Every structure is written in structure tokens, then in C-alpha cells.
Length: 292
Image (cartoon, rainbow, N blue to C red; front, side):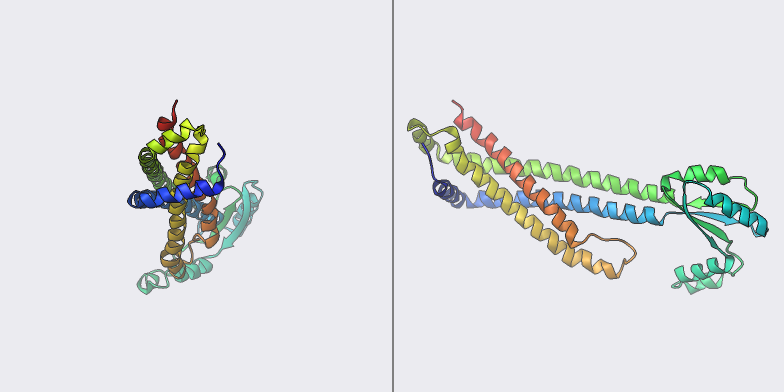
């Protein structure tokens, strides 16, 4: 027995009106779940931005002894430049190091006053093609004349990334749990609608309606609930960016922050997730009532 699209839409919206409270609960749960999923995607993108920015700024600092001779300094620089792992090498004199120190700690004049221009060593600032190759470069330079110590900040960044990985996994776990909760609540909404119309469904089966003819309105009901939750979650992500993330640009200009494009990037994922969860929940909810 064929049914027109108008019939399916009419049946769907009538069911939604009859179960307004449950509809609100299902949409609210879907909203929270998809908002957390979108938050996870944005956190992952923010971590990727920070990682890319950090790796671009990772330097190996080769601090030189005050007693290094010009010949030793030149030989050392040539040796570093010949290393295949090295991208660029820059020399920073004691005066340049002191000037950079004053710029970094401009807001702490007491600290600057207690450090003399001769206290900071000259150094080579080395950028690597791959920041993970620090150990290889360090091994080749250890013991070379004129070197005081070799330092990089990779260990600090590794600790930072370890913390962000834990945070990312935690948010993903919460989002998955909430998606399961949303699926359960959407499925319960559809199950209630099926139960309320069980007599009508029985009549439809007697006159030859197929299972899919009966299922479609309930599938549409679940999809609409999921899509409403997704729309609310997307709107909330844009509001969060406008109210909380955009004001940070003036305070943490050194840190790359997610943009509107990153939020738009999450939209297809949230819409697809809402449809998949809704369809799965609706199919499971209607299967029991439509089994022969």
C-alpha cells in the first residue's frame, strides 16, 4: 500500500505534538550530547593548532662558554649547518640575549635590574626540520669545545601534550556516553509513539501495509528530534565562540585559537551523528512491534 510523502509528514508531526514533553527531553539530551561532541572536535582542533604552532617555534639553544674563541665558534656553526636535521641556525650575542631578556620580562623591572648584560651567555638558536630529532643533534654536539650546555623545550611541550591528550580522551568519552543516552531517549520516544498507535498499526498490517510503510513516520520523528538537538548544539557552539573565545584574542594573542571556520568544520559531523543516532534508535525501537 503506497503512501504519499504528505501522509508520512502529517503522521510524524502529529506524533511529535502528542508527545511534547518527551520530545523536549529527547531534543535536550541530543543537544547536550552533540554539544559535547562538537566541543571535543573543537578541543582536538585547538590542540592541533597549538601543536603546529609549538613545533614551528621549537628551538634548540646551544649556549656557548664565555671563553670560546672565534675559530671555535665558526667551526661549531659550520658543523651545525651541515647537519641534515637542521633547518636554520642563528647566532645570538650576549647583548642580543640581554635585549631579548628585557623584552620578555618588561613587566618585571625588579628582575631585569638584578640581571647584568654579561650574565646571559651567547648562543646558537637552531631550528630543526623535525623537532623530534633533538636527541640526534644533541649527541653529535656533546663534548664539542666551546659549548656550555644544550637545551630544548621539547620535554615541556611533551608534558603539555600529554595533559591535552587526557583532556581530549575524557571529553570524547563523555560525548560518547551522552550520544548513547540521546539514542536511548530518542528510542524511548519512538517506542512510546509506537505503543500509543499499536491498534492503528495492527489495522494497517491487516490491510497490507509493509513494515517500512509503518516505520517511516517513526524514523522521521527520531531524525527530527536529532536534527533539532544538532541545530541547538551548533548554535550554542557559535555563541560560546562569540562570548568566550573571541574575547581571548586580545589577552592571549600568542596562542592560536579556533576560528569560525573550525566551527563550520564540525557542522557536518554533528548533523551526520544526529541522523545516525536517531535512525539507529528508531529502528531498534520499532523492531519489537513490527516483528512477525
